[in-house]
Image 1 (cartoon, rainbow, N blue to C red):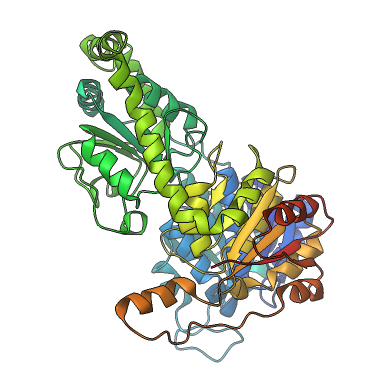
Image 2 (cartoon, rainbow, N blue to C red):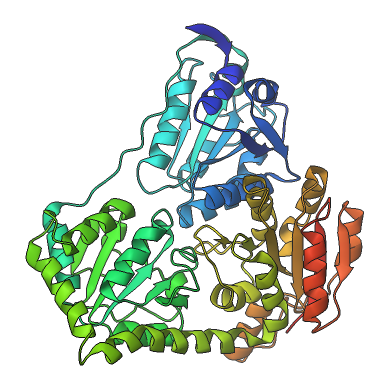
Length: 549
């Protein structure tokens, strides 16, 4: 065992778990951590606010499936990051927050120490999967290993590890802890048999793929092809089946046509989705007596909708087992596979046209609704789709142009390519998340899409992106303030109050922060596309200010 300071032990532990980037801001109490990041091969990425650091770590994690790490000082640094950690918890994103903390023997009633917080761990415990305060240098490698094991071994949710600043400076022998191999949870055989039979018996199956299916897109596609089932994705599941696949019916569970599809189906396979009110908008889907559900979380699998059959486990092995059952493997009776084959044979005869037409019919209906809902932003969204192509990533904000527009209109050919703050619905997410995604995928195009209200929450991160020299187009859609809330007020019959925001000169603001800035003529999609293409090859970010209702 080698003697190390707490800061060195922490840096070595992170590097041992494959961490090569961390986001954050140095502060008086965490300097010993920062001193040891570069020597261990970890690149510290500076941001202008700790919320931006945690959002960037979230964007990195969503884009890669890896753990995103942010490092803050004690007290206000942690609390500044708290909103982003709550967003990561809501959307099941593995973000690790490392912070300094009050000294090990700090009096419980306080002394007025710099950054002192009454009970910081209690605050974070109510937000993340767990908050842990280490008590010795030797414990640090174990605390980091436990955090990674938690985030990799089940439902991926954020963790906070606090290291007292006196422990960071102390030296002690340290025993490295190797990363634990990720355990793969497999559903019970009896449940698999029941699910395979239920789906094989269905004449009109459908599939809903959520963020929990992001690691198994090929298997989602194979199951859909085996069943001849149209696939709907949630916002976080967008790209789990390529948009150009004939069985991809679209994105967004809130759409009327999606509800009609579920109602018409006699079996619905839901993979890795909470079926949460934030996804549905208008109440539960009509899933009674037809729901087969796969989820890694044994609580989530019975929340919001009671399944006829529940499969608790990772999406990939569960879908693999279903496919094996339908092909006559030992995971389920051979008769199950025979039922699927029989339905396929029927499709070649008199019923071939109805069976073949169903996915196409639903795809067209859902697509038509999505286009109608998003047409007012068509001149903004369609150029973005063109420049992103098959390899691009869109980092969106909680803005109307995203959840009513981009989510349902833009294509996605792979998972983890549409980053959006679904459950918690935070404003300001898009820009720092886009920074995280661009650092994760430097060779691929990344575009940020935000509203004029939300961008002001984290606009300072333009300076961080400029310092990094990122070719990152940032499209800011101006609609005069908080447009969604204004519309809600009007629907209530209330006069709009505190929602009308005069827009600054966003292009000039971007220039002042070291970026390119450009105002795009209203309705000129060609000009926007040209500006986006310039932004994707520029040596710094480009803010594009557009006006749209």
